[in-house]
Length: 309
Length: 190
Image (tube, rainbow over all chains, first blue to last red; front, side, top):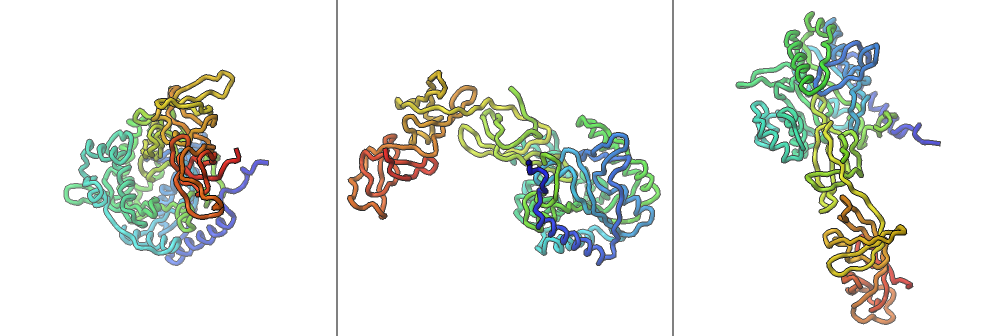
């Protein structure tokens, strides 16, 4: 008989995982942040250029993140809240990627991004164990590593540096920068790095702020042992700007030969109604658990993965 | 020639990188949550043996390299070329140059079945079997009775290679040698 029915994670690991999950929930209970459950299947997906939803014919899309529905809750009056549940991204298969993965998404009302960052660090300390954290802006990171200014990038220079670092053929500055941020973090050789103030083209749904002559995104990523663990924003509340960014996404999707995606009208209406001031973050929980247990692949901490993952 | 897209990348795949045939050692999907997906690949250059690391954008492809491995029996060398014979009934002979034979030349024993890598039909590398039997052509006189332990001394093998052997080994002895480490294993009963 084939052994393929067996879980990819050991039962001991899954028992430990249950403990860690409990620890994460206690973290939120202690802070009076309420647990919510939104649906994983929704009529609409996202316009993000680098995220592909899985389409369910006749129904809509498996959600790549509970962001839109959770923000609809916040707009309707929900206090600070968190959610732990599955998220889906087509084509993301690897040692540290599963098509279906466990996302911890959380929003805190009336906090600054700095406060949320401190809370994310506290959560990781609580689940994995404490360790010092280095905080750097993306500009500092790229200046120190390559003498590169990500807010005024020179395309040929970006491509040249990326190629020197082993990237075969970036099509433009954006791809080169995505790659160089990763290599620069790796070069630091530091276990925990908080990256802040992203170039505005990477603002996604984060507010931007003027720094000198450029807009920077009020966005952070927390990188632990080289893995992106959390991605947080000072949340955009301007519905007009939201539409502008979705249109820009769709333009770029078409440029890259990807289908343009419909803009979720329910989410847009919630933005028009008014999202309260809040900061939010998504945490890759399977990755965090793997780090906490010293495992070297997601398949070692989740019971089952799609064939081939 | 066929090509492979990043989602087909896996260890063992043979592709062309900068014109050289390479074998993939590792291929890992990496992607920032909101950014471009990449595939990070480690290759071994099949000609130089060097390990290369490259990152490709997801969706890119690489040209397949026409690389095959075949078992052949070693025959002899004329100093410039090393001759091997196919193990099928055709008894075809092929010649490999010093660059292809590389360090394997130290451990090519007659009749030894070797694995030869061909790129576009040309031999580019030779792997001898893990163990071969080779005769000693030169070494200091053996110390009678000293068969248990003690020091070692250099001995020259019929291929010209020099390895360390126990003191009791004499000229004409046939030794079993581990070709991966170049170490003496035992005196052959042959």
